Image (cartoon, rainbow, N blue to C red; front, side, top):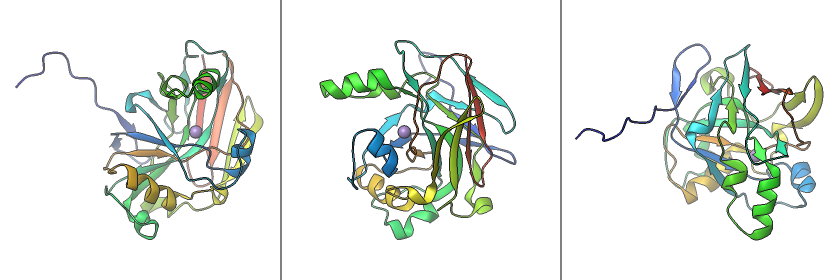
Length: 230
Ligand code: MN
């Protein structure tokens, strides 16, 4: 059987050192650092919750290059959220936290860009968040690095600078639900598959960017991610 329209291009992100990683789904974790949960008006260790972005919202940026995103439509409050991204190499369901690490292929630095005004409107009305999160070019990502190269990333600084000024700062050790626990919870709700990415949540300091701003995200042990807003 032949397709009746041209098939959409498959989505893949570059791997440091060569090759590409084909992407199936992007899962995102909400409010996963205590200080950020507080700045969003919450406290305590509530169970993790998840949302998704379409794979084709990824904007891959090569190591040492400055990527670019267009300022999105419908918003006047585009926020940066710097996040550790985990790439799943081996799928599964009901994965125990103690067994989760072997399902990880690698890691990258990602930005969960957010139309905060639209997200807040939807929250207020009890409606889905997609319009605030799942928009074009909403998921810039740096090169993926194999876990075989980095080892398990359990701690280390995570920062975001905008135009050279420090805006977000945290440590992977401060994740409310660490990567292994996140995989355990996520795989109760969905069957993880090779090619899935998990944006693991952002530390405190989220704020708006405007056209002309340059964001630079960094996580200890990974290539940084530099993105300009056009
Ligand atoms: Mn986020």
